[in-house]
Image (cartoon, rainbow, N blue to C red):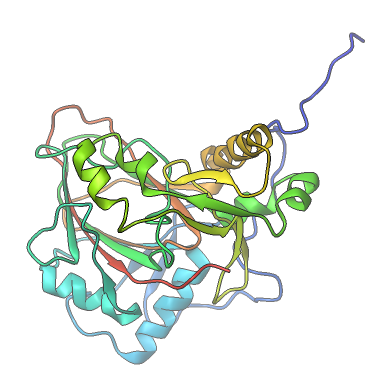
Length: 299
């Protein structure tokens, strides 16, 4: 045969390890609502709940288990008022504000209206990793949906870590990376505004692989929008490794895709996922509102 070589840091065809649950955690039924899986390890539609009503303690606990197991939960036809959306999110903690994004009245409700201003689309990212304590999760509602397109995708970063080559896992074990708001926001923010916020949002370091504070899973925690380099690595090696790690969100086996209807809610674990708003709807109108839940320091 002709000589050939497969690059050590290439992406390979063939089977992938797709573990939805951490080691030692057994499958259990859900008793208080219906769960309809949308992909192998990530994404489930929840049926039988009205999110405009207060959550009973048992329902909140079972929803939290579903969030940990599926990483992003979908609820059809909710049509929540902003206060109800905020009240639902507060079941998981205090809400955070983001002065870099437009609000929908209350400072903690971010409004994404592509007809009014350019927003985060067509890039895989994890929200606000440029903060010392990135968001724990987010609750997004679509107010207006284009006649076609405008879907959102999420990627399971625990599955992404599981399938890394062993030499990559060894190299990044214990490594830390720098995250900065500038790369992500420079695309659509005036230079004077970027300069204004540099003092408020200095670069921060996070583990390249973080451990989930509830499930214990190890997960990749770098993303294209905000991760600039791996601390202590030569620039060439840092760039090479980050290119490989960024690629993992693009693997279809780790993804789920949600086709929105007006009034739908998506609730995702920002610690364990990346997401991608698909910009394929041209000049049509798409309006979404998001509430983010304050998180902890990654470890």
